[in-house]
Image (cartoon, rainbow, N blue to C red):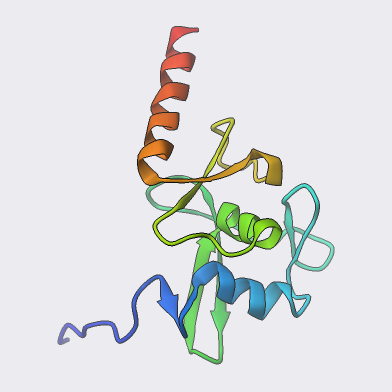
Length: 130
């Protein structure tokens, strides 16, 4: 087959980020809920979470019939957006304690990518020194 260029940017569609789309289409409509501990629920059970290919962090992927595509974002980004609002452009969400599955709101930090990398290397050196 012939390679086709994507018609929309990978991170934005309808001028919204993926976490904004998932929040508006699934959380606001009650399909997914986020509790005070940052856990995402589908009804009374946890939804199927996939692990990201590169960073081994939990990811939510949902089919959106309106845009006819899958929408995905990390659980950390979705939880941060839910409790704090829009994530500034070119910022990343990282965790204080290094556990990507610990998405409690108080454990999430919005920072520059370089700060996120330095925090990760600091944790790695602390663990290696033990």
